[in-house]
Image (tube, rainbow, N blue to C red; front, side):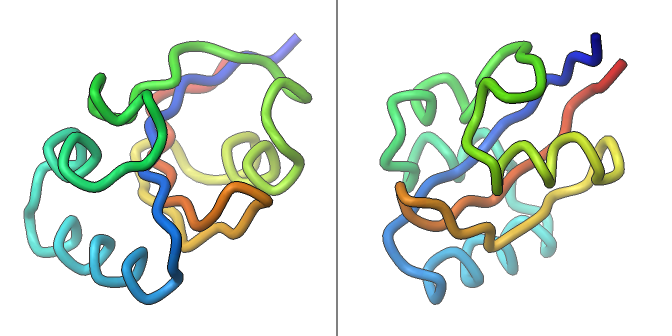
Length: 92
């Protein structure tokens, strides 16, 4: 069974998500941005969600984490919770 580890930032709007992605692409630290802006409690841990398997997250989130490239930041990814930036830390 496959496992992955990811960090994310959850915000209310696509516009804000794109602005934060631009900041990260320009060199801002993902964990610091998560601590400052994420609505998810994981934001206080730099957005770290720990390790999880397929089906443990919502479908849209799972699709990105289990198909994207490790080390890259993806988003905005819309779910029922809002808009996410997702960084894939590892997958095996």
